[in-house]
Length: 331
Image (cartoon, rainbow, N blue to C red; front, side):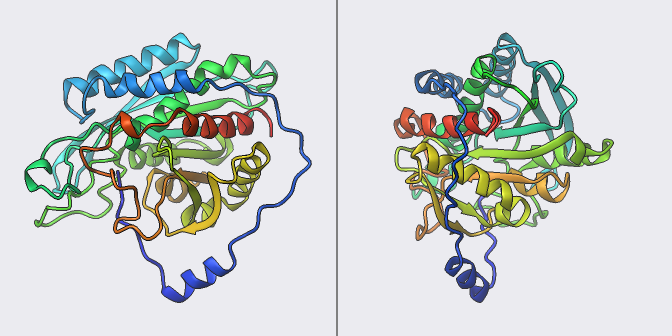
């Protein structure tokens, strides 16, 4: 997954941290929602069972079929968006995004949709491994990819159980998010090498008629399964979608999950939401596990062979899932 952090000026960072917004108290009634953590966990495990979902492999193809058929079984309208994008070394890379629409109740189907997204591919290289021999082996991607997809699959399963569905929901599962330049690569490289599926989706969406009228806002889930995960207020999210960051974090606080959705800020992170915001012009929030003070900014298992089911907690999936269900349930 894209993880070159773009550092902003030191003075601006200090100013931003010093003025981190406080959670606002709200008396707004929480909608009644259900979310099954065990089911979400099973969806994560189901993806990982195929093996590394590296684009062009049988595991990748089989996982696409599994996700698509499962979402169709839940009543979603599922389609594929495909195209060719240049990867880090200039070679063409085939991209296949999975798009699934959950319709609103009668009378609300023409409302702008809430965009929910994650990436389903996994990194072809474990380029953060200390052992060089391990770096060329693809990773399982349990957290880095599968966790967000698992939560969204469970949300699709629970969609019919919502009391009110006043806005459609569009789930977009991006491909080739993790095809960015490997840490060991020393040749010439192109810019914007991460999030290739999101770049394709954003460009095609921007060409459509009034994309910002078709989508109210978006939420990206990335690495949302670690038992110790905390989700800070990421800088690009606040820059482009600040009022939705406030809304999500306020809902999390009311649900009792302020320990997970923390008020600290994270450096701007080049993730799928960046291209949704800057190209498609749809305000999009990144809910991402960030580790302040770590060498990479991310957890110890990131882009290593340790990104497996041992680091997936049903409790974390439950808390993230309930927050998103609360938002789409009319909060």
